[in-house]
Image (cartoon, rainbow, N blue to C red; front, side):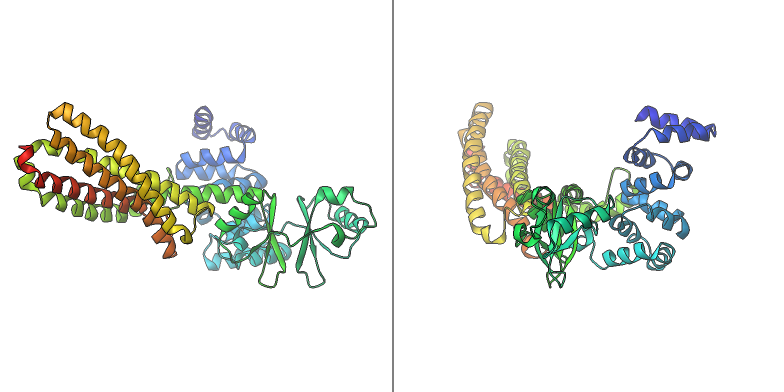
Length: 445
């Protein structure tokens, strides 16, 4: 890719547009999107202008949010409408949703009425809901149709719709069953769909969170999930490819939020925007670091009397922090996959208490022995060992309690959890270690 990027830059510098177009023809839209992320604004415009509309539409869908907004600002309403016509309605809705309201309406007026209506239908649902990620690309047949009639309807549809399942509806368009395509093909022509359909299929409601959609698709090993409204009327489907996109999006969001940055940040985000994303959390981190430092400040006299104990402060804090992160990652993942609910809180806390105690005993005893042989003071080893036991128990409990509390408050369980966790383990670790050192001070001097 670096060689291709250099080749594209040389074509731009020498104004060899034919060579540029030939190079772009050999690339997948996702690769072109990756190259655009690395170019400056003027180079982005020139490369994008050389793409065929069909390819340009696919490239838009692969861009990072920041670069996508750059192009949507640069393109005219007519150009955007031409590109959205090359997309599936759910893809066009994702692009149109990024536009200002006025521009959005102008674009929707320019595209064909049939596409415009479908896009408007999808835009009425919030972005991160089942309705927001569903596709209108599905086949629904009446329950009283025969196999022969169903196959005739499918032939009329042709190749316009991707088929994994045929959905069966009643006279009021309510979903009553689902039929794998294979079963439709191997059943006798005279049989009615209602006789062989899978009744009470797994569904999601349009207003449900996209994470819930992912859980149901993965739990039941589905290729697609029907989406219904409160009246059980079939409104769309979420396909496996959409589920994979959500999994990547949610995983990325959790990782970034655990670290205290915005969910939409990428490696290509401009420096000043990254600063705006990160600075609030770093400011909070700074404040909380002063809280931890103030705990150390309470024991200045102890540290002055036995300076060697300062050597062990990073050990106590570091092991506590790492222990807490291990628990935090497991709990956040469990919440994301639906393996953990708030009803499990006490069971989880008891389990993590046991894990923290066991790990604390193992690490604490090992550290106490190393400290004794290193510094020749058994009391110092005992103090460090006990402090580690206490801090690792606190770390496991905090690593579980923080995301569960955030979930209970209807916030993202990963939201800044790493920052809060580090503060708790630092405070508990310093307070325990230095408090014990002060208590046993005469044995340490």
